[in-house]
Image (cartoon, rainbow over all chains, first blue to last red; front, side, top):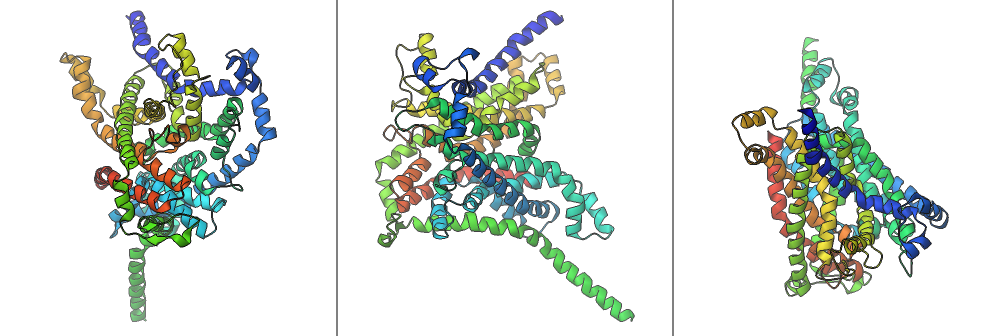
Length: 277
Length: 307
Protein backbone atom coordinates (compact mmCIF):
# COMPACT_ATOMS: atom_id res chain seq x y z
CA UNK A 1 0.00 0.00 0.00
CA UNK A 2 2.64 2.56 1.05
CA UNK A 3 5.23 1.77 -1.62
CA UNK A 4 3.20 2.51 -4.77
CA UNK A 5 1.58 5.53 -3.09
CA UNK A 6 5.03 6.98 -2.31
CA UNK A 7 6.04 6.54 -5.93
CA UNK A 8 2.80 8.13 -7.02
CA UNK A 9 3.36 11.03 -4.66
CA UNK A 10 6.85 11.58 -6.07
CA UNK A 11 5.54 11.60 -9.63
CA UNK A 12 2.47 13.77 -9.04
CA UNK A 13 3.75 16.09 -6.32
CA UNK A 14 7.50 16.14 -5.66
CA UNK A 15 8.51 16.20 -9.32
CA UNK A 16 6.19 19.02 -10.43
CA UNK A 17 7.07 21.02 -7.31
CA UNK A 18 10.76 20.50 -8.04
CA UNK A 19 10.22 21.84 -11.56
CA UNK A 20 8.47 24.95 -10.27
CA UNK A 21 11.16 25.54 -7.65
CA UNK A 22 13.76 25.18 -10.41
CA UNK A 23 11.87 27.69 -12.54
CA UNK A 24 11.66 30.13 -9.62
CA UNK A 25 15.31 29.81 -8.68
CA UNK A 26 17.12 29.21 -11.98
CA UNK A 27 17.45 32.85 -13.11
CA UNK A 28 18.96 33.95 -9.82
CA UNK A 29 21.15 30.85 -9.64
CA UNK A 30 22.37 31.73 -13.14
CA UNK A 31 23.17 35.23 -11.88
CA UNK A 32 25.23 33.77 -9.02
CA UNK A 33 27.14 31.51 -11.44
CA UNK A 34 27.78 34.51 -13.70
CA UNK A 35 29.10 36.54 -10.77
CA UNK A 36 31.53 33.75 -9.88
CA UNK A 37 32.97 33.51 -13.40
CA UNK A 38 35.75 36.01 -14.15
CA UNK A 39 34.76 38.50 -16.86
CA UNK A 40 37.48 37.40 -19.29
CA UNK A 41 36.22 33.83 -19.09
CA UNK A 42 32.61 34.89 -19.77
CA UNK A 43 33.55 36.51 -23.06
CA UNK A 44 35.80 33.63 -24.14
CA UNK A 45 33.96 30.49 -23.05
CA UNK A 46 30.77 31.54 -21.30
CA UNK A 47 29.57 31.07 -17.74
CA UNK A 48 31.48 28.39 -15.86
CA UNK A 49 29.31 25.59 -14.51
CA UNK A 50 32.07 23.79 -12.61
CA UNK A 51 33.66 25.12 -9.41
CA UNK A 52 37.08 24.88 -11.12
CA UNK A 53 36.37 28.06 -13.09
CA UNK A 54 35.01 30.05 -10.16
CA UNK A 55 36.68 32.93 -8.38
CA UNK A 56 35.68 35.93 -6.31
CA UNK A 57 37.37 38.21 -8.84
CA UNK A 58 34.19 40.12 -9.69
CA UNK A 59 33.37 40.67 -6.03
CA UNK A 60 36.85 42.05 -5.32
CA UNK A 61 36.57 44.42 -8.27
CA UNK A 62 33.14 45.47 -7.05
CA UNK A 63 34.50 46.43 -3.64
CA UNK A 64 37.82 47.90 -4.77
CA UNK A 65 36.97 49.71 -8.00
CA UNK A 66 33.44 50.93 -7.42
CA UNK A 67 31.70 52.86 -4.66
CA UNK A 68 29.32 49.98 -4.09
CA UNK A 69 29.72 49.86 -0.30
CA UNK A 70 28.91 53.56 -0.16
CA UNK A 71 25.76 52.91 -2.21
CA UNK A 72 24.79 50.16 0.22
CA UNK A 73 25.14 52.68 3.04
CA UNK A 74 22.84 55.15 1.26
CA UNK A 75 20.28 52.41 0.74
CA UNK A 76 20.55 51.45 4.40
CA UNK A 77 19.97 55.03 5.59
CA UNK A 78 16.96 55.44 3.31
CA UNK A 79 15.43 52.06 4.13
CA UNK A 80 15.84 52.49 7.89
CA UNK A 81 14.54 56.07 7.72
CA UNK A 82 11.47 55.00 5.75
CA UNK A 83 10.86 52.17 8.16
CA UNK A 84 11.02 54.44 11.23
CA UNK A 85 8.85 57.18 9.75
CA UNK A 86 6.31 54.65 8.50
CA UNK A 87 6.08 52.79 11.80
CA UNK A 88 5.94 55.85 14.05
CA UNK A 89 3.00 57.45 12.27
CA UNK A 90 1.25 54.14 11.61
CA UNK A 91 1.22 52.71 15.15
CA UNK A 92 -1.07 55.39 16.60
CA UNK A 93 -3.17 55.48 13.43
CA UNK A 94 -3.69 51.71 13.58
CA UNK A 95 -4.67 51.96 17.24
CA UNK A 96 -7.22 54.67 16.43
CA UNK A 97 -8.75 52.68 13.56
CA UNK A 98 -9.11 49.46 15.51
CA UNK A 99 -10.20 50.82 18.93
CA UNK A 100 -12.40 53.83 18.15
CA UNK A 101 -15.61 54.28 16.20
CA UNK A 102 -15.71 57.92 15.13
CA UNK A 103 -17.20 60.01 12.35
CA UNK A 104 -15.01 59.84 9.25
CA UNK A 105 -13.39 56.52 10.18
CA UNK A 106 -14.46 54.77 6.99
CA UNK A 107 -13.43 57.70 4.84
CA UNK A 108 -9.98 57.91 6.43
CA UNK A 109 -9.41 54.16 6.10
CA UNK A 110 -10.49 54.38 2.48
CA UNK A 111 -8.04 57.21 1.96
CA UNK A 112 -5.10 55.07 3.07
CA UNK A 113 -6.22 52.21 0.86
CA UNK A 114 -6.61 54.57 -2.07
CA UNK A 115 -3.09 55.98 -1.70
CA UNK A 116 -1.72 52.48 -2.01
CA UNK A 117 -3.30 52.24 -5.47
CA UNK A 118 -1.92 55.48 -6.88
CA UNK A 119 0.30 54.96 -9.89
CA UNK A 120 3.93 55.75 -9.08
CA UNK A 121 4.13 57.78 -12.26
CA UNK A 122 1.39 60.14 -11.09
CA UNK A 123 3.40 60.93 -7.93
CA UNK A 124 6.94 60.79 -9.23
CA UNK A 125 6.59 63.71 -11.66
CA UNK A 126 5.05 66.24 -9.22
CA UNK A 127 7.34 65.02 -6.40
CA UNK A 128 10.29 65.82 -8.63
CA UNK A 129 8.97 69.33 -9.29
CA UNK A 130 8.15 69.94 -5.60
CA UNK A 131 11.40 68.53 -4.24
CA UNK A 132 13.38 70.54 -6.75
CA UNK A 133 11.68 73.66 -5.42
CA UNK A 134 12.41 72.78 -1.77
CA UNK A 135 15.96 71.59 -2.41
CA UNK A 136 15.18 67.99 -1.43
CA UNK A 137 16.47 66.37 -4.63
CA UNK A 138 19.49 64.16 -4.10
CA UNK A 139 19.04 64.01 -0.30
CA UNK A 140 18.24 61.16 2.04
CA UNK A 141 15.21 63.02 3.39
CA UNK A 142 13.77 63.37 -0.11
CA UNK A 143 14.00 59.66 -0.83
CA UNK A 144 12.69 58.73 2.62
CA UNK A 145 9.63 60.92 2.01
CA UNK A 146 9.13 59.48 -1.48
CA UNK A 147 9.32 55.89 -0.22
CA UNK A 148 6.91 56.77 2.58
CA UNK A 149 4.15 57.35 0.02
CA UNK A 150 4.05 53.55 -0.22
CA UNK A 151 5.24 52.65 3.27
CA UNK A 152 2.77 54.65 5.39
CA UNK A 153 -0.50 53.34 3.91
CA UNK A 154 0.92 49.82 3.87
CA UNK A 155 1.97 50.05 7.53
CA UNK A 156 -1.38 51.55 8.58
CA UNK A 157 -3.31 48.65 7.05
CA UNK A 158 -0.99 45.91 8.27
CA UNK A 159 -0.88 47.25 11.81
CA UNK A 160 -4.64 47.86 11.93
CA UNK A 161 -5.18 44.16 11.25
CA UNK A 162 -2.59 43.26 13.91
CA UNK A 163 -4.15 45.52 16.59
CA UNK A 164 -7.58 44.19 15.64
CA UNK A 165 -6.39 40.72 16.66
CA UNK A 166 -5.46 41.90 20.18
CA UNK A 167 -8.50 41.43 22.49
CA UNK A 168 -10.21 44.67 23.45
CA UNK A 169 -10.85 43.34 26.96
CA UNK A 170 -7.17 43.94 27.77
CA UNK A 171 -7.54 47.67 27.03
CA UNK A 172 -10.74 47.87 29.00
CA UNK A 173 -9.18 46.18 32.01
CA UNK A 174 -6.26 48.60 31.94
CA UNK A 175 -8.56 51.61 31.67
CA UNK A 176 -10.71 50.41 34.55
CA UNK A 177 -7.49 50.34 36.58
CA UNK A 178 -7.11 54.02 35.78
CA UNK A 179 -4.77 54.00 32.79
CA UNK A 180 -5.32 56.72 30.19
CA UNK A 181 -5.69 55.86 26.51
CA UNK A 182 -2.07 56.65 25.72
CA UNK A 183 -0.76 54.72 28.71
CA UNK A 184 -2.87 51.74 27.65
CA UNK A 185 -1.43 51.98 24.16
CA UNK A 186 2.11 52.20 25.47
CA UNK A 187 1.93 49.64 28.28
CA UNK A 188 -0.58 47.06 27.06
CA UNK A 189 -1.10 47.18 23.29
CA UNK A 190 2.37 48.15 22.09
CA UNK A 191 4.18 45.16 23.68
CA UNK A 192 1.63 42.82 22.13
CA UNK A 193 2.09 44.52 18.75
CA UNK A 194 5.83 43.88 18.65
CA UNK A 195 5.71 40.85 16.30
CA UNK A 196 3.45 42.78 13.93
CA UNK A 197 5.63 45.87 14.12
CA UNK A 198 8.75 43.84 13.37
CA UNK A 199 7.35 42.09 10.31
CA UNK A 200 5.72 45.26 8.97
CA UNK A 201 8.96 47.15 9.55
CA UNK A 202 11.01 44.51 7.77
CA UNK A 203 8.66 44.54 4.80
CA UNK A 204 8.93 48.33 4.57
CA UNK A 205 12.70 47.98 4.75
CA UNK A 206 12.68 45.45 1.90
CA UNK A 207 10.42 47.58 -0.32
CA UNK A 208 12.47 50.71 0.29
CA UNK A 209 15.73 48.84 -0.30
CA UNK A 210 14.44 47.38 -3.58
CA UNK A 211 12.84 50.61 -4.85
CA UNK A 212 14.25 51.83 -8.14
CA UNK A 213 12.22 54.56 -9.91
CA UNK A 214 12.21 57.11 -7.07
CA UNK A 215 15.88 56.40 -6.46
CA UNK A 216 16.65 57.02 -10.12
CA UNK A 217 14.57 60.18 -10.46
CA UNK A 218 14.97 61.86 -7.06
CA UNK A 219 18.48 60.65 -6.21
CA UNK A 220 21.65 61.86 -7.87
CA UNK A 221 25.39 62.17 -7.47
CA UNK A 222 25.42 62.48 -3.68
CA UNK A 223 22.72 60.00 -2.79
CA UNK A 224 22.80 57.00 -5.09
CA UNK A 225 21.07 53.92 -3.65
CA UNK A 226 22.21 50.46 -4.53
CA UNK A 227 19.48 49.75 -7.11
CA UNK A 228 20.65 52.67 -9.26
CA UNK A 229 24.30 51.80 -8.65
CA UNK A 230 23.80 48.26 -9.98
CA UNK A 231 22.69 49.66 -13.29
CA UNK A 232 25.69 51.96 -13.56
CA UNK A 233 27.93 48.88 -13.40
CA UNK A 234 27.07 48.31 -17.05
CA UNK A 235 30.34 49.14 -18.77
CA UNK A 236 30.77 52.02 -21.16
CA UNK A 237 31.54 50.11 -24.33
CA UNK A 238 30.33 46.62 -23.65
CA UNK A 239 28.23 45.16 -20.89
CA UNK A 240 30.34 43.75 -18.05
CA UNK A 241 28.02 40.92 -17.05
CA UNK A 242 30.35 39.47 -14.40
CA UNK A 243 30.70 42.69 -12.44
CA UNK A 244 27.02 43.49 -12.93
CA UNK A 245 26.02 40.05 -11.63
CA UNK A 246 28.22 40.46 -8.56
CA UNK A 247 26.56 43.81 -7.85
CA UNK A 248 23.12 42.31 -8.36
CA UNK A 249 23.82 39.42 -5.99
CA UNK A 250 25.24 41.66 -3.25
CA UNK A 251 22.51 44.26 -3.73
CA UNK A 252 19.71 41.71 -3.61
CA UNK A 253 21.07 39.72 -0.68
CA UNK A 254 19.95 41.80 2.35
CA UNK A 255 16.34 42.07 1.23
CA UNK A 256 16.12 38.45 0.08
CA UNK A 257 17.47 37.06 3.34
CA UNK A 258 15.13 39.25 5.37
CA UNK A 259 12.21 38.17 3.22
CA UNK A 260 12.94 34.48 3.71
CA UNK A 261 13.29 35.18 7.42
CA UNK A 262 9.88 36.83 7.91
CA UNK A 263 7.80 35.33 5.10
CA UNK A 264 5.56 33.25 7.36
CA UNK A 265 4.59 36.16 9.62
CA UNK A 266 4.11 38.56 6.75
CA UNK A 267 1.90 36.35 4.69
CA UNK A 268 -0.57 35.86 7.53
CA UNK A 269 -0.99 39.62 7.92
CA UNK A 270 -1.17 40.26 4.19
CA UNK A 271 -3.85 37.75 3.42
CA UNK A 272 -5.94 39.20 6.24
CA UNK A 273 -5.37 42.82 5.39
CA UNK A 274 -5.26 42.20 1.63
CA UNK A 275 -2.68 44.91 1.11
CA UNK A 276 -0.30 45.49 -1.75
CA UNK A 277 2.51 42.97 -2.02
CA UNK B 1 -17.98 71.47 49.49
CA UNK B 2 -20.08 68.79 47.92
CA UNK B 3 -21.21 71.24 45.26
CA UNK B 4 -17.61 71.98 44.39
CA UNK B 5 -16.70 68.31 43.97
CA UNK B 6 -19.70 67.60 41.79
CA UNK B 7 -19.00 70.52 39.50
CA UNK B 8 -15.40 69.48 39.33
CA UNK B 9 -16.46 65.95 38.48
CA UNK B 10 -18.80 67.33 35.87
CA UNK B 11 -16.00 69.44 34.47
CA UNK B 12 -13.68 66.49 34.43
CA UNK B 13 -16.19 64.25 32.76
CA UNK B 14 -16.97 67.06 30.32
CA UNK B 15 -13.34 67.48 29.36
CA UNK B 16 -13.02 63.70 29.36
CA UNK B 17 -15.79 63.45 26.81
CA UNK B 18 -14.40 66.18 24.69
CA UNK B 19 -11.01 64.54 24.83
CA UNK B 20 -12.42 61.11 24.12
CA UNK B 21 -14.09 62.53 21.06
CA UNK B 22 -10.90 64.00 19.79
CA UNK B 23 -8.48 61.21 20.78
CA UNK B 24 -8.76 59.17 17.56
CA UNK B 25 -8.16 62.30 15.49
CA UNK B 26 -5.04 63.17 17.46
CA UNK B 27 -3.79 59.64 17.06
CA UNK B 28 -4.42 59.78 13.31
CA UNK B 29 -3.04 63.27 12.79
CA UNK B 30 0.63 62.37 12.10
CA UNK B 31 -0.20 59.79 9.44
CA UNK B 32 -2.86 61.98 7.82
CA UNK B 33 -0.70 65.11 7.78
CA UNK B 34 2.34 63.34 6.34
CA UNK B 35 0.35 61.62 3.61
CA UNK B 36 -1.45 64.85 2.79
CA UNK B 37 1.89 66.54 2.22
CA UNK B 38 3.63 63.76 0.30
CA UNK B 39 0.69 62.28 -1.60
CA UNK B 40 -2.29 64.61 -1.93
CA UNK B 41 -0.36 67.81 -2.43
CA UNK B 42 1.76 66.32 -5.26
CA UNK B 43 -1.38 64.83 -6.77
CA UNK B 44 -3.10 68.21 -6.91
CA UNK B 45 0.09 69.63 -8.32
CA UNK B 46 0.01 66.91 -11.00
CA UNK B 47 -3.54 67.74 -12.02
CA UNK B 48 -2.63 71.43 -12.19
CA UNK B 49 0.55 70.76 -14.18
CA UNK B 50 -1.40 68.76 -16.75
CA UNK B 51 -3.18 71.97 -17.78
CA UNK B 52 0.11 73.73 -18.48
CA UNK B 53 2.59 73.57 -21.28
CA UNK B 54 5.56 73.03 -18.97
CA UNK B 55 9.02 72.08 -20.21
CA UNK B 56 11.21 71.75 -17.15
CA UNK B 57 14.33 73.95 -17.03
CA UNK B 58 12.42 76.37 -19.24
CA UNK B 59 9.93 77.39 -16.53
CA UNK B 60 9.50 80.91 -17.88
CA UNK B 61 8.02 79.56 -21.08
CA UNK B 62 5.34 77.76 -19.06
CA UNK B 63 1.81 78.76 -20.02
CA UNK B 64 -1.75 77.67 -19.29
CA UNK B 65 -3.21 75.59 -22.12
CA UNK B 66 -6.41 74.27 -20.52
CA UNK B 67 -7.27 70.90 -21.97
CA UNK B 68 -4.63 71.38 -24.67
CA UNK B 69 -2.44 68.51 -23.45
CA UNK B 70 -5.42 66.17 -23.34
CA UNK B 71 -6.51 67.09 -26.86
CA UNK B 72 -2.95 66.54 -28.05
CA UNK B 73 -3.06 63.16 -26.31
CA UNK B 74 -6.04 61.88 -28.27
CA UNK B 75 -4.35 62.80 -31.54
CA UNK B 76 -1.09 61.17 -30.53
CA UNK B 77 -0.66 57.74 -32.22
CA UNK B 78 1.91 56.72 -29.59
CA UNK B 79 -0.75 57.18 -26.89
CA UNK B 80 -3.00 54.64 -28.61
CA UNK B 81 -0.09 52.21 -29.13
CA UNK B 82 0.79 52.52 -25.46
CA UNK B 83 -2.84 52.04 -24.43
CA UNK B 84 -3.11 48.89 -26.54
CA UNK B 85 0.20 47.59 -25.14
CA UNK B 86 -1.10 48.25 -21.63
CA UNK B 87 -4.20 46.16 -22.38
CA UNK B 88 -2.10 43.25 -23.69
CA UNK B 89 0.33 43.72 -20.82
CA UNK B 90 -2.39 43.38 -18.16
CA UNK B 91 -4.53 40.92 -20.11
CA UNK B 92 -1.71 38.39 -20.45
CA UNK B 93 0.42 38.96 -17.36
CA UNK B 94 -2.29 38.71 -14.71
CA UNK B 95 -3.95 35.49 -15.99
CA UNK B 96 -0.54 33.87 -16.53
CA UNK B 97 0.60 34.79 -13.02
CA UNK B 98 -2.70 33.57 -11.61
CA UNK B 99 -2.66 30.28 -13.54
CA UNK B 100 0.89 29.43 -12.56
CA UNK B 101 0.20 30.59 -9.00
CA UNK B 102 -2.89 28.36 -8.80
CA UNK B 103 -0.98 25.27 -9.96
CA UNK B 104 1.82 26.03 -7.51
CA UNK B 105 -0.60 26.55 -4.63
CA UNK B 106 -2.47 23.29 -5.30
CA UNK B 107 0.83 21.37 -5.37
CA UNK B 108 2.11 23.07 -2.22
CA UNK B 109 -1.14 22.26 -0.43
CA UNK B 110 -0.33 18.54 -0.68
CA UNK B 111 1.67 16.63 1.90
CA UNK B 112 5.33 16.01 1.08
CA UNK B 113 8.51 16.04 3.16
CA UNK B 114 10.21 19.23 1.92
CA UNK B 115 7.10 21.38 1.73
CA UNK B 116 8.36 24.15 4.02
CA UNK B 117 11.57 24.50 2.03
CA UNK B 118 9.72 24.54 -1.30
CA UNK B 119 7.38 27.24 -0.01
CA UNK B 120 10.30 29.43 1.03
CA UNK B 121 12.29 28.92 -2.20
CA UNK B 122 9.35 29.67 -4.46
CA UNK B 123 8.97 33.23 -3.18
CA UNK B 124 12.52 34.23 -4.15
CA UNK B 125 11.36 36.09 -7.31
CA UNK B 126 9.05 38.18 -5.14
CA UNK B 127 11.90 39.27 -2.86
CA UNK B 128 14.36 40.36 -5.54
CA UNK B 129 14.70 44.06 -6.47
CA UNK B 130 13.00 44.73 -9.80
CA UNK B 131 16.16 46.27 -11.25
CA UNK B 132 18.02 43.02 -10.53
CA UNK B 133 15.20 41.02 -12.11
CA UNK B 134 15.27 43.19 -15.21
CA UNK B 135 19.05 43.02 -15.65
CA UNK B 136 19.09 39.30 -14.91
CA UNK B 137 16.56 38.58 -17.64
CA UNK B 138 18.34 40.88 -20.08
CA UNK B 139 21.38 38.71 -19.53
CA UNK B 140 19.33 35.55 -20.03
CA UNK B 141 17.70 36.96 -23.19
CA UNK B 142 20.97 38.32 -24.61
CA UNK B 143 21.03 37.41 -28.33
CA UNK B 144 24.77 36.64 -28.49
CA UNK B 145 25.74 35.13 -25.16
CA UNK B 146 22.39 34.64 -23.39
CA UNK B 147 21.67 31.26 -21.89
CA UNK B 148 18.11 31.04 -23.27
CA UNK B 149 19.24 30.97 -26.89
CA UNK B 150 22.03 28.51 -26.06
CA UNK B 151 19.50 26.24 -24.40
CA UNK B 152 16.91 26.49 -27.18
CA UNK B 153 19.49 25.92 -29.91
CA UNK B 154 20.87 22.95 -27.98
CA UNK B 155 17.36 21.48 -27.75
CA UNK B 156 16.85 22.42 -31.44
CA UNK B 157 13.70 24.39 -30.63
CA UNK B 158 15.04 27.28 -32.67
CA UNK B 159 17.56 27.25 -35.51
CA UNK B 160 19.44 30.46 -34.85
CA UNK B 161 19.80 33.04 -32.06
CA UNK B 162 16.56 34.91 -31.41
CA UNK B 163 16.91 38.62 -30.55
CA UNK B 164 14.22 38.44 -27.83
CA UNK B 165 14.30 42.05 -26.73
CA UNK B 166 15.36 43.62 -30.03
CA UNK B 167 12.52 42.20 -32.12
CA UNK B 168 9.51 44.57 -31.95
CA UNK B 169 7.11 41.63 -32.32
CA UNK B 170 8.66 39.64 -29.50
CA UNK B 171 9.90 42.20 -26.98
CA UNK B 172 6.58 42.82 -25.22
CA UNK B 173 5.98 39.09 -24.77
CA UNK B 174 9.51 38.53 -23.49
CA UNK B 175 8.93 41.21 -20.83
CA UNK B 176 5.53 39.67 -19.99
CA UNK B 177 7.28 36.33 -19.41
CA UNK B 178 9.65 38.04 -16.98
CA UNK B 179 6.81 39.69 -15.12
CA UNK B 180 4.93 36.39 -14.93
CA UNK B 181 8.00 34.89 -13.30
CA UNK B 182 8.22 37.79 -10.86
CA UNK B 183 4.54 37.77 -9.91
CA UNK B 184 3.40 34.14 -9.67
CA UNK B 185 4.74 33.60 -6.12
CA UNK B 186 2.38 36.29 -4.84
CA UNK B 187 -0.61 34.42 -6.25
CA UNK B 188 0.73 31.07 -5.05
CA UNK B 189 1.00 32.34 -1.48
CA UNK B 190 -2.40 34.05 -1.49
CA UNK B 191 -4.20 31.08 -3.06
CA UNK B 192 -2.44 28.66 -0.70
CA UNK B 193 -3.84 30.61 2.25
CA UNK B 194 -7.29 30.33 0.64
CA UNK B 195 -6.91 26.58 0.07
CA UNK B 196 -5.98 26.00 3.68
CA UNK B 197 -9.24 27.62 4.69
CA UNK B 198 -11.35 24.96 2.93
CA UNK B 199 -12.40 22.26 5.44
CA UNK B 200 -11.04 18.79 4.62
CA UNK B 201 -14.39 17.22 5.48
CA UNK B 202 -15.88 18.66 2.29
CA UNK B 203 -13.42 16.68 0.16
CA UNK B 204 -14.01 13.53 2.21
CA UNK B 205 -17.76 13.81 1.75
CA UNK B 206 -17.32 14.42 -1.98
CA UNK B 207 -15.04 11.41 -2.53
CA UNK B 208 -17.47 9.24 -0.57
CA UNK B 209 -20.11 10.34 -3.05
CA UNK B 210 -17.74 9.28 -5.83
CA UNK B 211 -16.90 12.74 -7.18
CA UNK B 212 -13.85 12.73 -9.45
CA UNK B 213 -10.86 14.97 -8.56
CA UNK B 214 -11.82 17.31 -11.41
CA UNK B 215 -15.38 17.67 -10.12
CA UNK B 216 -14.03 18.20 -6.61
CA UNK B 217 -11.84 20.97 -7.98
CA UNK B 218 -14.77 22.59 -9.81
CA UNK B 219 -17.31 22.36 -7.01
CA UNK B 220 -15.27 22.65 -3.81
CA UNK B 221 -11.83 24.14 -4.50
CA UNK B 222 -12.78 26.81 -6.99
CA UNK B 223 -15.73 28.26 -5.05
CA UNK B 224 -13.62 28.09 -1.87
CA UNK B 225 -10.81 30.21 -3.29
CA UNK B 226 -12.98 32.52 -5.41
CA UNK B 227 -12.84 35.44 -2.95
CA UNK B 228 -9.03 35.19 -2.79
CA UNK B 229 -8.75 34.93 -6.58
CA UNK B 230 -10.92 38.01 -7.03
CA UNK B 231 -9.10 40.13 -4.45
CA UNK B 232 -5.60 39.05 -5.46
CA UNK B 233 -6.51 39.38 -9.14
CA UNK B 234 -7.80 42.93 -8.79
CA UNK B 235 -4.82 43.90 -6.68
CA UNK B 236 -2.49 42.46 -9.29
CA UNK B 237 -4.23 44.21 -12.20
CA UNK B 238 -3.60 47.51 -10.46
CA UNK B 239 -0.05 46.56 -9.52
CA UNK B 240 0.92 45.20 -12.95
CA UNK B 241 -0.64 48.20 -14.69
CA UNK B 242 1.42 50.54 -12.52
CA UNK B 243 4.69 48.65 -12.61
CA UNK B 244 7.02 50.02 -15.20
CA UNK B 245 10.44 49.58 -13.57
CA UNK B 246 11.06 46.16 -15.11
CA UNK B 247 10.13 47.31 -18.64
CA UNK B 248 12.09 50.52 -18.21
CA UNK B 249 15.29 48.67 -17.37
CA UNK B 250 14.78 45.80 -19.81
CA UNK B 251 13.86 47.68 -22.98
CA UNK B 252 13.37 51.35 -22.09
CA UNK B 253 10.09 51.11 -24.01
CA UNK B 254 11.74 50.02 -27.25
CA UNK B 255 12.46 48.84 -29.86
CA UNK B 256 10.50 51.77 -31.25
CA UNK B 257 7.37 52.06 -29.17
CA UNK B 258 6.74 48.32 -29.02
CA UNK B 259 7.02 48.00 -25.23
CA UNK B 260 5.58 51.37 -24.26
CA UNK B 261 2.82 51.11 -21.69
CA UNK B 262 0.93 54.21 -20.57
CA UNK B 263 2.79 54.88 -17.30
CA UNK B 264 6.10 54.24 -19.04
CA UNK B 265 5.20 56.64 -21.84
CA UNK B 266 4.36 59.33 -19.27
CA UNK B 267 7.61 58.70 -17.43
CA UNK B 268 9.75 58.75 -20.58
CA UNK B 269 8.08 61.92 -21.89
CA UNK B 270 8.86 63.69 -18.63
CA UNK B 271 12.28 62.18 -18.06
CA UNK B 272 13.81 62.37 -21.51
CA UNK B 273 11.96 65.25 -23.12
CA UNK B 274 11.40 67.06 -19.79
CA UNK B 275 7.89 67.64 -21.11
CA UNK B 276 6.24 67.61 -17.69
CA UNK B 277 2.94 69.12 -18.80
CA UNK B 278 2.28 66.43 -21.39
CA UNK B 279 3.80 63.63 -19.29
CA UNK B 280 1.55 64.52 -16.36
CA UNK B 281 -1.49 64.65 -18.64
CA UNK B 282 -0.74 61.05 -19.72
CA UNK B 283 -0.29 60.02 -16.08
CA UNK B 284 -3.61 61.60 -15.07
CA UNK B 285 -5.43 59.96 -18.00
CA UNK B 286 -3.93 56.60 -17.08
CA UNK B 287 -4.99 57.04 -13.45
CA UNK B 288 -8.56 57.78 -14.51
CA UNK B 289 -8.62 54.69 -16.75
CA UNK B 290 -7.31 52.55 -13.92
CA UNK B 291 -9.81 54.15 -11.54
CA UNK B 292 -12.60 51.67 -12.30
CA UNK B 293 -10.50 48.70 -11.16
CA UNK B 294 -9.44 50.63 -8.08
CA UNK B 295 -13.08 51.46 -7.27
CA UNK B 296 -14.10 47.78 -7.45
CA UNK B 297 -11.19 46.78 -5.25
CA UNK B 298 -11.89 49.50 -2.68
CA UNK B 299 -15.57 48.55 -2.49
CA UNK B 300 -14.66 44.89 -1.92
CA UNK B 301 -12.08 45.60 0.76
CA UNK B 302 -14.22 48.09 2.65
CA UNK B 303 -17.01 45.50 2.74
CA UNK B 304 -14.57 43.03 4.33
CA UNK B 305 -13.55 45.61 6.91
CA UNK B 306 -17.14 46.25 7.96
CA UNK B 307 -17.71 42.55 8.62
